[in-house]
Length: 319
Length: 319
Image 1 (spheres, helix red, strand yellow):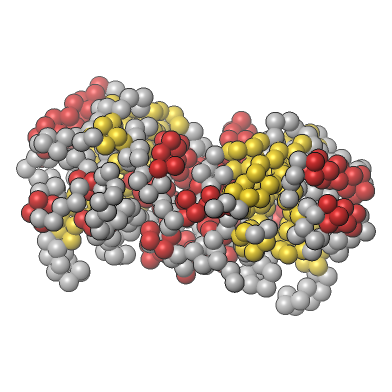
Image 2 (cartoon, each protein chain N blue to C red):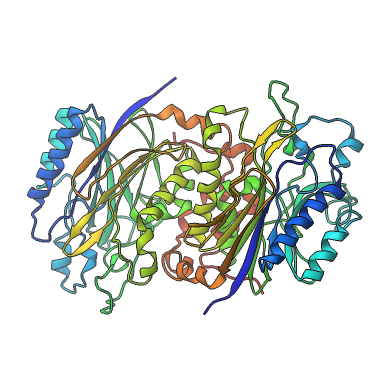
């Protein structure tokens, strides 16, 4: 048996702050057309793929901040992408900053999320994920060479409703979404693994330099792959990780976009720091080789011994 | 600041079924003396280090099975190891099969565990761990070239009492134990990470050939390192993984014993398939570089989104 899904990791180089959404969508369309030529059925774009990575700047003017957010999806700038992808019968995953005015079930407050959507081959949004593990900090830290203010500009979604690590039936498989820093947390993959996920799609913007821990800088690409490969193997799932990379407004970001098999092996990888497509023909049925043996959860997991994972947030050493 | 702990991964080659415990302890002592010559303060021996890996055989005679178990620790065969280690002021971690007659708090039943102990530099047992993730199967499966009957011969410990992933204050740090298959499960490291663990000690017996999934055989060494490196990085802890390896009673087992830094990097590794010592001088204070930044759990974890991890044992796909 085999369920083939040909996937493209559509890596992006840097997006300048002055670059318009129309210019960025032109780049997304160029990658879409390359993907079409290679028989790709699902294209994965990075996190916050429509603009520069704006959390690197401390801003106080809410209008200036909100200019980086989308109020509708598709919207004026992205309708072209939806239309062309539907015409070519290519699904896609796209990351963007989402502004939800009068958010239902959240007291009518305006919410801002770091969001990814899954769009099927007909151009319909079939899944929406709002980033849970927001990295960085909430207050201005002028000593940093650049800021990482995701905790300031984005909300963490509440569980339930549209919040949480979900898995959707799409593309003849079980697909899940997460974003950037989520990929470093084994809980991310496990919650989706417990829903039988067969392919996790994720985009990232990861600076090479981590101001609070510069001693990790030389390892940033290693940590990126290590986390995704372990998540794939330990849950028997494909993982497609896609970077926005290269030099962006003076900040160097890692590339290393990769398509990873349920074995944990990297089967396709970008080798530049710019716009580039890596493609793999993925058999979703290969997941079963892990899900029914070493990682047969129903047979081998021991959740009665895992209670600290949900009972405790921070680490507490023993007395 | 630095808290140095010089650790030795004391890998063992195969142990024949006919080999006596006295012969094995001679080998453990030889490694102990090598360790002493290299300034090692803590030696880590493999899982079930006193006998051949007996779950590879289907046995029905309980006396034959119980002959592989220890009823006391130290016992007649292991007292020499305790005495010599204490004389040299070297602590150690040792895996063995533990028989507990009339187990307290368990209804007076006889229990059999796959156990590891942590012994301090004075020769006192300061920690005991009983394996939670027992791999393999409980019934005879004659189609296999060899059995893996851990689910038949061992009990899973109940939570509480002496059961569970614990962390002990020892060797001027926070040390945890797990065993073999535990290392493939991110929950193992996370439960200890939530107790601030700074070094995880583990032994393993891992056949190269996995009868239910022979397609994984060429990846067994990769999966071994991938799991331990991810567990180290994602919890900011040292991991010391030690194999019993080589050809044992016709069954080939992986080596690859490794000492892994909180960065996920392998800093020392065995390169044979036999008795061999790999040594590293480990700074327990290096953990803080991860525990206070990327993996500052109190700041970044979102346990309200992890509830499936404890609510659910097996995977359940969405409707």
